[in-house]
Length: 330
Image (tube, rainbow, N blue to C red; front, side, top):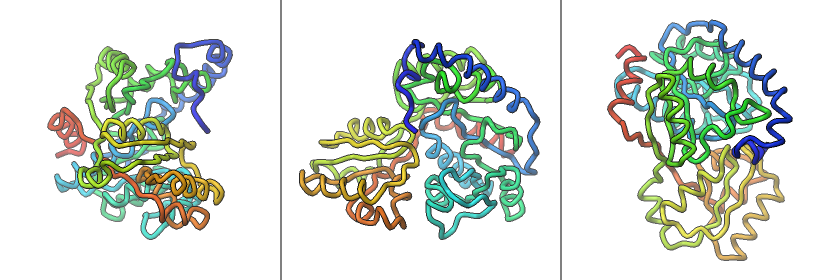
């Protein structure tokens, strides 16, 4: 599913018509969030989204896990495994994206990762197999598991959109209900919409951090001067394309797909043939490449394309580290 354009504009007719449904959805979501979650027995740090759509959540979860690893806190990452067939709990090992989802494959490169539809059961498995702390990738709105620290992601370009609850807008639950249960907001990238979201967060007494996604320097150097066909099937493909533009790459064409998109044989072939015809290098995200690998229908695309690794850096590095380590009991 692609985000409706009206979500990210000042409220108009479509948002107004859907507001009654948004009120019902928001009331249910707010009531669920008010429920007490089960305690995991180890500190739980949740990296979640205020809105539907991508905002850099997975790179932030990887950064949080790395901070905990460096402090000797033995983190496990917990994911629902969206897009995968396995209900879990299962520890990610030699799995495919079709089984555990694409994001867990990336997370498992950074730290031991458990996929579970029942997050409390996943947390129990992580604790029983040696976790000293848990980083939740998403699940902020779920009441299933108690969180010791919740950090909410905001995209600097899109912010919180029209500030209405799904389906009238992109919010996953009423804004106030979400902010009351969080400790911090991490704004990724710059933009007026992100500045507005920052002001609202500060009014609710939350700490605000500022991050940016930085491409791997070595990979970037190898791409300089090469004409690129960029494609992405993530929550916000424009974020990826903007990163390429800011890095100075020669992007000749951009093709976007819905989040967690499974490429058909025809789509994969069309991208490969277009790149050959126009003399372009196929470039995508690590998340897309994880999904392409092992998928027979997309085998030709997986061979022809390459991924650009990115990492999240936070301007307030020491303060962000201290926030996470305090929650982990360090």
